[in-house]
Length: 147
Image 1 (cartoon, helix red, strand yellow):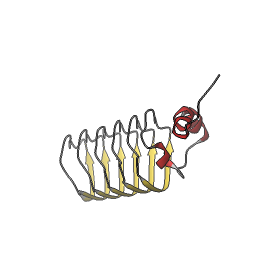
Image 2: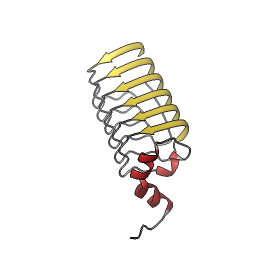
Image 3: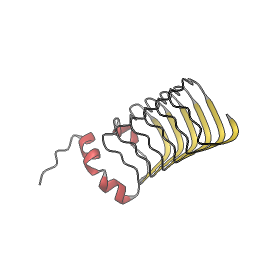
Image 4: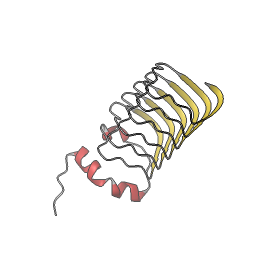
């Protein structure tokens, strides 16, 4: 998909290993359970999309925006993320283990149960988001929280 705009596209459970998306805008689309391993996404914006249970293992994402997306249990294992923004996304129980990232920003995201949180080293977040996710970060460091 190159130079495209898609509204309400339904790719639920689609097997699209190695798919290429360039200069694309996807709005209100459903990708639940889609397998997009080894995908290449560049200059792509996802707005109000459902990407829960999506497999993006070993994918390459450059200049990608996820805005108001539901991404529960999304799998980014060993993906490469450069210039990626997650804004107001639900990333509950997502997997970031082994992710390589450069210039990543997370704003207002739900990170509860995130796996591989240590891979977020170097990511940018607003202070309030850091405080909200403090227990997640403390657990990743092996800190015991006491009263």
